[in-house]
Image (cartoon, rainbow, N blue to C red):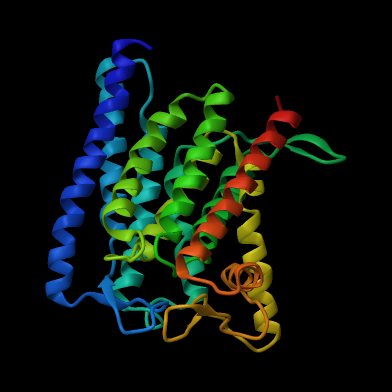
Length: 341
């Protein structure tokens, strides 16, 4: 690794780390004073945490990525920074949309249908720079070139799908943060194995920002919630990495848990239930299934853990889901490497 490479790796990480620490500390104080609080639903008593922490995580991540872009521009002027700027713009737009929803309030903000529609423009930065590879391989058909339809159809569907899907499995202390860390770390590993080393330089500022947030404020018992600004941002960023570096097949496989969540959500609608992920909580903090049937991955986790241990705690649900996600990512990675070495 050359000296320039070390600088381009370390400085963005430092920028993201320091900005995350500074802004999150500031927001924890200010958010508490302003009363920007949300109830922690999986606790036996009324406990509250500061809302909207994800915005500061994502903003710190964007500045980290921009630091890398600046270093690339001045240290290696032969490279184009436009694609990386489009990724940073996508992350920023997704996070800002989520923050609007956070400000308007849970169940009072943007409706689910409008939320999906509003995430479509988030893909515009990637469409504008014609990000991704227009050729795809389909079973029985072979390789086809979608041309402009890749940018106009596949890219928006990927961004909208990932940002909304990542928002579906949430509501437990540290869950979204750890899910984000697993997904982004594993796609970075695949990028390295495929020779796309720049994936690491772009994703590492986001990973360290999430790590700072989790360690200081989001791990159990949480002092701060990530909110939709976090889930939309991470989901859109993940899709951006997959699109730009041609890792869409892996990204789809790695989201298996979220496809299961969608199926369980639809099952709930068919049964007349618009489900919540939160559990019922007894007087000593044990979690109980909120419905007779499972309408979320979190409900499945509670039922499974109770069957194994006899009781279930919030940290058990988070650990169970994160381990399953890690296993899915490893299997997805090995599958992609086996089929597309």
